[in-house]
Amino acid sequence: MVLHSVIEMQNYDKAIIVSGDGDYHCLVDYLIKQDKLLHLIIPNRYKYSSLLKKFADKIVFMNNLKEKLEYKKR
Image 1: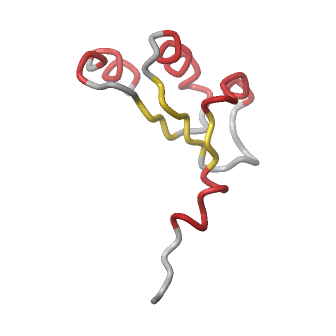
Image 2: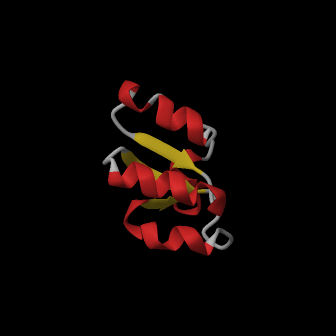
């Protein structure tokens, strides 16, 4: 995913990364420096890599999206 994101960079305006894994720290950092990262969506606000905490202004936690994403019977 990291290599593909960089190779295809000219083909997209902004990226959204969905992960709480610190392995993507370098990719997130690079995309921010290139002004290519819209959001870093972290699935669980209670369990994610501390390496990603420095990107707090780009982080959206899925825990906060539950009401928007959950299925509701009509």
